[in-house]
Image (cartoon, rainbow, N blue to C red; front, side, top):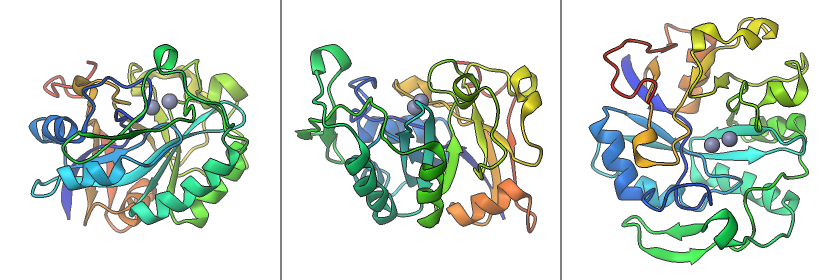
Length: 255
Ligand SMILES: [Zn+2]
Ligand SMILES: [Zn+2]
């Protein structure tokens, strides 16, 4: 068993709201210099830059998981995390069918660049990714679980696109694997979590849109960086665990 420092919420230049520096080599260098061992690439409603980040991470002690930050019909952000790009691409097909055919206005929303592992431009994604799909939160979670992925509502206490401000409660019939609190919240003092179902772990990530946003606050004690091991850690099974590092000597904490 090994301790892995992880950040499971990260945007590349494919997300219109992300900074232009969020290209694979810079993301990898920032993660490595921060002592992070696991990243999940989670662009808004898209998966096209995951492989480029994986290629850029070759040769480093850094695992890149295949993810997406899916926007549901209720305007809730859901982290969807998989072991393989193939699983993520299968979810992408569903999202492509459920995302409105509205073109991006790069001057207003920002560019949506698909790049290679060096950060070189391949093409722009033309459809606006900052939009709600017609998938409900429940159906999105079901899709992710059918593909053996992890479903984690993002920044649940954030006013914009957070589960709790949108729905008012944690619906008891939803079977997500963990919840993420907003990066600027103190996870030990999030009052809205009083309505939170017991037994589901709380994690925190950087939701990085800029290169210095990586947080790396999640410490997993697991065998290897796979979603199955994360699932065990979330459930506290077989000696696996996850905890949030809140020490003052964590240089990224609160930045
Ligand atoms: Zn979000
Ligand atoms: Zn995000």
